[in-house]
Image (cartoon, rainbow, N blue to C red; front, side):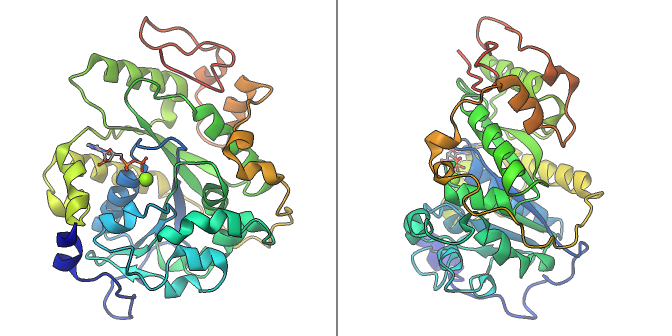
Length: 359
Ligand SMILES: Nc1ncnc2c1ncn2[C@@H]1O[C@H](COP(=O)(O)OP(=O)(O)O)[C@@H](O)[C@H]1O
Ligand SMILES: [Mg+2]
């Protein structure tokens, strides 16, 4: 891993006027997109880094905000999280303004707010904080106008860090791995999105569901992909991220895949995703900064900080799914009862819609 940091040598460079191209942007206020799924290993960090880098490659000023204490997104951009002077932890703790934490990357249009292992304690430390789900949203108001896009890599839980990310975001990308149990747990995530909409961030939309680690040689992968499309309809991105060894290798060189091997399948997949989101965002209406939310910090109750409570089964699972996707292009078939498609993939009716599960 040392080659990452020594070869790039920009582990702690702050953004300075003049170096980065950031400042020349189209949207008065950037679009904030969280990459979330409480399951680990589905491709959140890989997607955050490579999607953000692909937006930057399209000369869209982009900020990657690393909300995962594991800090793999930070190191994946060649920055040693052990040496960063300030991280998102200090922002959430209220001891540093976000602009002091922003670092440049190798790419002129890409900045990063790094993570730090300290972030692992942040959820506990924030418990007594006033409006603790809205700390990140408030912090981002200061800098989001500098960027076209802010991409937030969420940790693998539905705790307070993810709640802060969803509350601060305009939309969410849900990576889904094309394998057994792909849909397991998505009901919990959709329910959390619904609750965030009700209490904290009514504007939150689902940007799209992203198939990751797709292997076209596996019949199962195609079956899962078509089942995900049956379930989410046109909320599934046309871009599909294939399983690609270059994508997996790139982080050990501290590079997004487009800098590591631009002609690889993975690089092309992530560039396609960026183009799709840029296209979908062309009519993104920039909202004026809303007044401070009247939602109480504990409107959700302490339980929402706990994945188990946040994910407790909704009483009306089908209704939950429909409403969780209601502000976006909801396919009519989402309203239909789930069907058993074949021997391999099965989403039974109840509680299957809220806890879809492959067999
Ligand atoms: N398209 C891909 N092709 C090959 N390996 C991938 C791909 N996407 C992710 N991986 C690998 O899968 C593992 C989990 O991915 P990661 O992005 O860290 O997931 P998460 O952030 O959801 O936990 C990592 O080792 C990563 O390199
Ligand atoms: Mg991750």
